[in-house]
Length: 146
Image 1: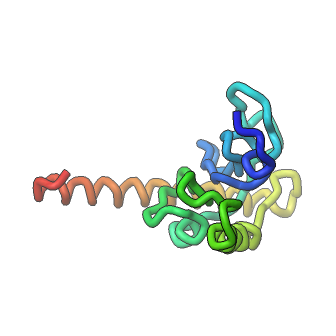
Image 2 (image 1 turned 180 degrees about the horizontal axis):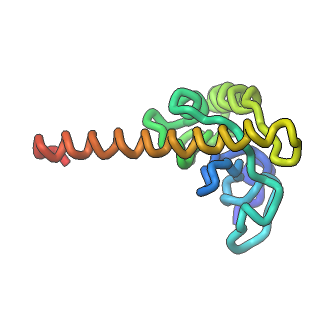
């Protein structure tokens, strides 16, 4: 298990849950700061965020060129943020986009409706992405490139 503070405490990935909320996880795919072994059921902890992530937002957050909104990586093994100042500055720019996102609380009565809209929007975004991916695969298959 990785044990650096970076691996435990810095956001590595936004993992969309079936409910439409995102879990922000560390390099061990655990909630930030968790260092326990074994699988963690994110829903058992208050770690899920109601943040709206469009394809455009996902592209700003992701280290990858083509970004799947179901799992958005803020860094990967090829660009570890603490490796040098260049990778840190790129990661820092992605963190800035993440930090500007609005979280709608399920616990605040006046935000519950907006939180539901955000979750539904995230799930709709995934369907749109999957539909586009299917069209691309179909197009490539017709050309014998798949």
